[in-house]
Length: 176
View 1 (cartoon, rainbow, N blue to C red):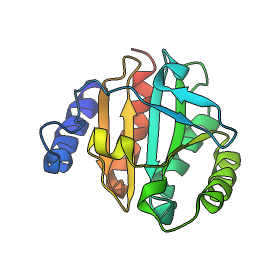
View 2 (view 1 turned 180 degrees about the vertical axis):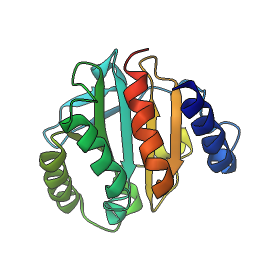
View 3 (view 1 turned 60 degrees about the horizontal axis):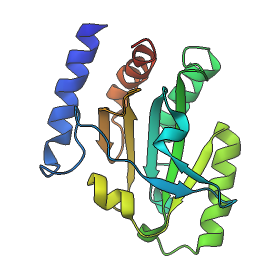
């Protein structure tokens, strides 16, 4: 498991090397945020305290870009490898990155929330994108451990050859 983690971190540092020094990077504690869902209920990372957290931060125009990765995480959850007690995957829509009106974004997000049995939150002004140095006009995938330390970050599409190691990373982090 340690070998997979070391290889994963090395690859992520390579891919994440384009981030600026103050952007969220592997090994950094993720700054807190607060966003609301379609019903106006506010959530923070503390809403899932003690859980490994997958944050899919997505431009609604690119909502299917990391579908292959999200499907792999869903399969691991369906197979009982990712447990509700120790893991949560959420989506945050980058509403400022699209031309689509908010009502349409909420409709698209509602479909995704049902499909993945999760919560979709809305960042109407790109706050998290700017705070974490995420890419605009794409999808971003971030895995945070139970202490909210960034253990993996992809700014853009998760490469096919990295999907299995990211799933294994999330599975392994549940036990820490």
